[in-house]
Amino acid sequence: MPVLIRDGDKRRALNCSLGFAISSAFSAVLAAQVPVASLVFEKYAVASQTRESSEAGAEALSRGGNAVDAAIAAAFALAVTYPQAGNLGGGGFMVIHFPRGAGGPRQTTIDFREAAPAKAHARMFLGEEGKYDARRHHWSHLAVGVPGTAAGLGLAHARYGKMAWKELLAPAIRLARDGFTATRGLTASLQPVLGQLQPPEAARFFMKDGRPLQPGEVWAQPELAATLDRLAGSGPAEFYRGETARLLVREMDRGGGWITREDLAGYQAVEREAVRGTYRGWEVISMGPPSSGGAAIIEMLNLLEGDDLAHAGWGSAASIHLMAEAMRRAFADRARWLGDPDQNSIPLPDLLSKAYAARLRQTISEHAASRSSPGSFEWPEEGRETTHLSTVDGNGMAVALTTTLEQPYGARIAVPGAGFLLNNEMGDFNAAPELTTREGLIGTPPNLAAPRKRMLSSMSPTVILKDGELVAVLGSPGGRTIINTVLGAVTNLLDHRMRIQEAIDAPRLHHQWLPDELWLERGFSPDTLRLLEALGHTVKIHSIPQGSVMAIARDPKTGRLEAGVDRRLPDGAAAGR
Ligand code: GLY
Image (cartoon, rainbow, N blue to C red):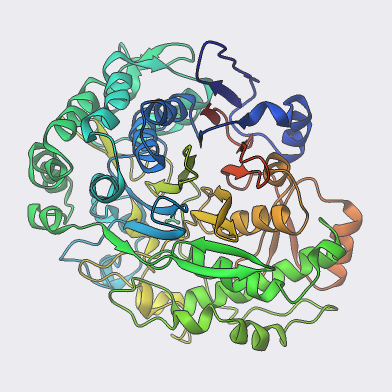
């Protein structure tokens, strides 16, 4: 990793073999080994977490498809090649930018977040004697939300795709039917979950001749191929009303889940307005509720616009402090206000306004960290696995697409006969009313489980424009850290004028209001850490890499596309021409 693929005769692959997870300090060394110029494409590009997925997207573009077609083809290929988070049994969000000459400049979004079943209620994760039961919340059939992926990709295709639906599924079907070569990254991530899969016989999906898959072996998934084939033939409705729905509900009934045929038949992806802001003259467009990502990023950028981050310098204690204080405030607002927009009244225009940011900025001191309150608050667990892909076509149309199963391999529950895994996204709802805060004030009502409600997400597929022209398209996995990972990449690009790969490689930071800790990746200077502690921050160095950004930047002068592939996770790849 990473792998670079170009269409045409001169195929090249840069393939550095490293372990499954590497530290950011290590990735900085790797960055020097991969010439930045080698990730430049003249016409179109796709960046995603697997080589096969990026190739599937590039194949769609080479056949005259647009950025939406490419994203759909790449997403279906990820459902085969990246079962950690690529999926049929989960959900996600898509942000689409239409350029001038193709109905733009304008943007829209597709929300295909999973939804709670009709039986859901705020206390459904309480077990015996009303005690919170984390297993019910995260690791049971009750943790599964109604999947949105087939509907979301279907809606994007119906409204904005150019190619035939069947053609977009063809690469994924090929990969599932004929198999693809398992990477070390895939086999290493699979190893710990094999023994946890339900029903236990589902482990055979991820095995080869009854034993764990080895790197370099060809892995075929015939049941998944058959499901994709049904979807290709009958369209996305097959997932919700056809044989796939029948198999999914059978598994729910077997395991005590609540999703019914009616829940599946009633699920709909929704086209929603993007959230948008400006930052020092750039436009930043991202996903609104039920994701918190876009709103939080715009609120933080509004706060930071009052400071000179470029002058403070990348990685300085001053700039990290200001970013952490912006994060603290945006995450407090996230907990207080954000949830499913169809079931909550969210003061979004206020939260996104410059006037609100100006008031909030008054509460930030350059000289001392603030304190987060209330001290009793505990976040529910939120999965760090998810996956992002970016596409740009020859007309400058761009798609940012983030999809998730919540935890790696989701609930670890498979649908026998259908060959795919189910999400545990219900875990993104707050655990129960009295558990969010002793005061009962913050983070509770907007994101408590309720019938057909969509759980709050952090996914942040984002597009940056200047004068209506594409500057960059990006996103990341990482649970709540997604928001700050994308914020960091945006400020690296816009304030610190980094190239896209540099912006991705740079060590990351995260503050989420509570716990009141500043998490830093390795790579910041010890002097900086001491200065941050002197300001009053509780600094924690995290050895686990934060996020995995897949991005494409566009040179405004030449129109050339530069893909950025995160080296924190293995197997990421860019493809294009
Ligand atoms: N499951 C991660 C997210 O929705 O943000």
